[in-house]
Image 1 (cartoon, each protein chain N blue to C red):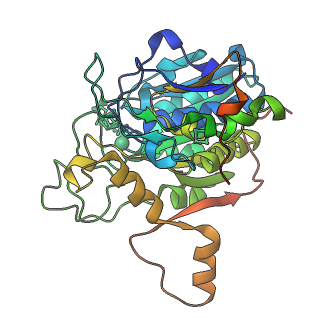
Image 2: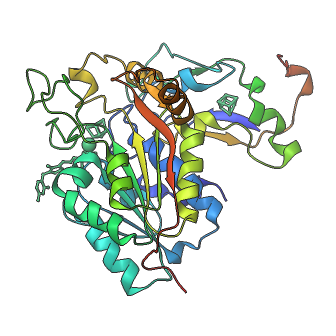
Length: 262
Length: 90
Ligand SMILES: Cc1ncc(C[n+]2csc(CCOP(=O)(O)OP(=O)(O)O)c2C)c(N)n1
Ligand code: SF4
Ligand code: SF4
Ligand SMILES: [Mg+2]
């Protein structure tokens, strides 16, 4: 089997815009799920509302497309009702960190056995490009027409501080690494959080000088700082460039988890 | 194995032109029936996966397939195989 077999082929092509990174993230996630050897009947995909949250609709398993921000609340319910199910959550930055922020920190605190893949396009894509809690400083959106003045959330740091067992971040350029990170997340008992930085050409790229899809992907690639390199810079007492974000496996630990079969 | 782009699924984003180590995908020139400029394949028989998947019994490389946001890239069976056409580049 390959990841192609997890798609509902009759629903493709999907509605994401040309060049939208969400499709890439779905591929990588499904490639990892495929390697777990799970049965389709025992796997559930859950999502909230947003472009990213449309993902489960294209996947050939049972799924819940829930209300905005509540994916984790529903996923917690599914997992606690039947611990035999493997639950994977697709969510967006707005869905997870804005309206669903409280569910996020408490799911991390409970360390419930879920794998959460956040497609962070740094914008509210579906509703036309409003700024989200992860929109970087100075970036333009419809609600920050003079450039975003608020510092953004670092979702991975948030997940680590709140208690998630596994945390890593990659981009839509690093497909193989992302696939491996999701796989590691699926294998880790407890809450696994994988942040995938991705391009949204329609709502973000167009307003922020990324005229071509490639430009944004190249930007993500050029501004990702490997964790090992970050640690090295830190040890040497050098400055970490402020516009870069750390990629790699940021946390793997063994806190007591909820929802794991004994 | 033969590399193929599904013209029904491709939306013409050209991401594949950036990721292939052999630069097999080239930006297309003519719009197709749907008005989408699908990338062209430049000597696709160079693809590592086309050449070696059968021999190794597993998917090799496959970066383009994973990257394609529209699930438009895949490999199809190709028969008969013409070895004299294969140009291996190092
Ligand atoms: C309770 C509620 N509030 C607001 C909305 C409107 N809304 C729909 S999608 C969305 C933002 C989605 O952003 P994100 O989660 O980042 O997903 P993206 O589209 O960027 O993938 C908002 C605010 C809603 N559907 N429901
Ligand atoms: S608006 Fe952005 S996130 Fe939504 S489908 Fe289009 S490119 Fe993707
Ligand atoms: S599998 Fe690798 S080598 Fe083959 S076409 Fe795709 S990116 Fe190129
Ligand atoms: Mg978003």
